Length: 420
Ligand code: GUN
Ligand code: FE
Image (cartoon, rainbow, N blue to C red):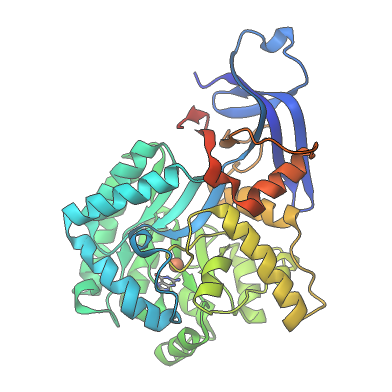
């Protein structure tokens, strides 16, 4: 089961600085795990089923560490405001619609189809405060074959009435039920505790969510230091906290199973705290430019050894395509280097590709590479003709920059299962 050979032109990260390519090679996959490359179809592997993608580019499925399923409906629109006004005018009114099962069914089916056919194989997804339609989203994502963490969102203050849960107790109780009912329901879809961010979660609710996470060893996702007005608001709301990151840490919400989206404006104390907690940063550069949030200090975070992956943050980010997110990460880091601090070198292609695959993949354990012992998550692109011979690495870079995924994915695998 799940044992086969894949033939084609492979491209994957070994480290941030090293991309490995294998041209016209055979990869042995056993029980869904990568077992090593062969140059020829030798005796040892000749009896396995062969997926022959000769001439096609094959790379690890990309990891979207942060996205919002209900916001897909308005992605690519409403880019005129900064975060707090944008939430009020666009995100919250859309999310309120997900109390309606039939609307959620229609909108989530469009989202699921889009993410299934993107270059992403694994994602960490925010739903809304509504438990029933979050269950529906999980059922639908399960059918795609993708591997996803999905969160029922928590909000019990500073939220419009349609999106404000009645009390911290009710919100926490629903969350605990959600965790208990879905932890073992699916093979590839798992629950994640999802306090939206400090402004919409009371201290009582944050405390309870920290307790639930500990009790169930559950992962956590939220937003941190995205926008300057947001950071000022958190200072007002949490006078006792040393900083925004500490406001989460006081409730045990910063763990090595936590993803904090954005982290655009971390102070040096906050960088230290995230490093101590081994918390993951979801870098969301498309969103950060659209919502004029700023440019995250990614070079500095890399130098401090933080766990970093990339996130589309749809609909702050306009697209689910991690190719676009990689490109934006590189471009924004060039602007940072030029305008803000020229001692910080821009991200290289190799570094940004690593963040989109092996960097984010670490949250899912051994995911995001084709090295031995990694789960086989892969995307195979349709064959593209070139005027002259490009190296496999150049083809990868060109695909990312020209968004070749729009021209077609010919196959996709998640933990050894062919889903497209
Ligand atoms: N902070 C709190 N909620 C959100 C959201 O939906 N999108 C973004 N980009 N930031 C947030
Ligand atoms: Fe977000």
